[in-house]
Image (cartoon, rainbow, N blue to C red; front, top):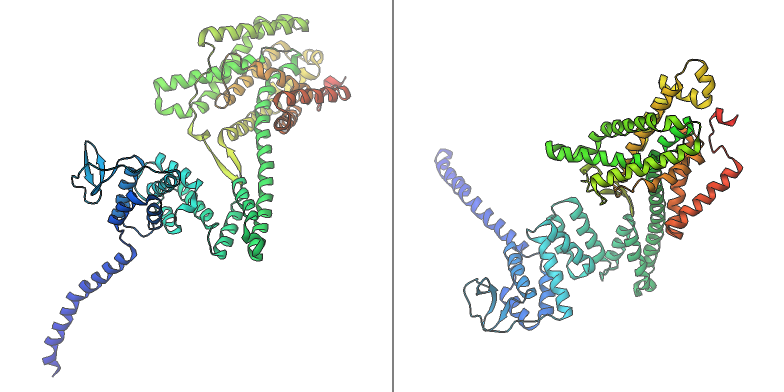
Length: 545
């Protein structure tokens, strides 16, 4: 019996194997179709000619479930409406190229009819719909950024489903985060209180000044007075966001002061060595900073001409060239000018001032007076948000790291090398150092070159974040001297602490009384301090005698 049934069973199984994929495929196709609700394109086209505002709002509500073809149709007809290319006659047509086509079929159509004009309310709805379509359809990065800015003004004009779909279609994490933030802001206006509370808690998790303003605006709504849960959620979110905003503000001031102090330190450390060792008031120190920036510029231009692929690394590759060129110029000036005037401090002051004027005019004649155009390397471009509104910019971070490297290198030279030992010996007691066989003149020459080279490195650090022109050095010479005098002549630790103090005080005072008042106040504070401690924060032992 079973042997006779086997062919029959085999036939039934084969039939099931053939029919199952067809049945399942049809069901799957039906399921997929259920997820996308087709638009009534004819009604939308007609609605734009009669009641554009409501039609645009309905179309915006349907974006979450619309098919790709419907999105493309909405894109065309919305662009035509915004560009006044929509023709409302017996059929709704779109002006395209030199002719007119049917808005629904794309076939050539009658060009006669009126062109609808959008009022302010309807234009806002059309802009919202166009921005949402830009995020849902293939578009350029600039168009997507523009669409995000439009939706940021009126996020409630687009449905949550459309924003969720746009977030899924986002091309990068930044765009996705921006769209998700728009969805949260749109949920603040939801009729469901639980959704509003969830949106309030989501804003509190990303505390910044913009979200704090959005949260504080909720205190004026009826729900804040009538719903205890909503009021508690808003108050807790405002308290949490306010705390993080204050922390971010403090960190931002600290970071700005640290970056400014880093530049001050690099600019002053060379001057501290020269002034501490020889007692020379080098008024040309600012011009060595300027020369360092110009050498960096020349390295960039040489790389641009000979090795364009390495231009992005010109700041790193220019470090040895900048140091050696400015150090060599410093050695030459010490040999030709400064060496002959050591016993006449006033004459060294006047001579170095004349050298500064000479260097400025040489650069002015060679390169002109305009600011130089530096390329911004990729590793110091942009920044990242750490907390709230506190953004760590990479160019300032580069200045801080570079100052630390300069500090470490200078400390190693002065503390761990025979040259550094000789410098310290000459600084503390020149006559005794000479008596034990140290070539003080040679030490003077090399120390002047080291100080000049460090000033050149300051110019390199300033190049990507500061205007580089022949007069840029004069802006740093006064503050460099203030750092040296406050820190203690010839003291590396004193120079570092004085730069940090002056930098932080400047950044704290500037937002309140302005840059000029900040510099005057800092100068008065230094004068008052020097009156009580003339040797500065850390005086060299030889200077206290």
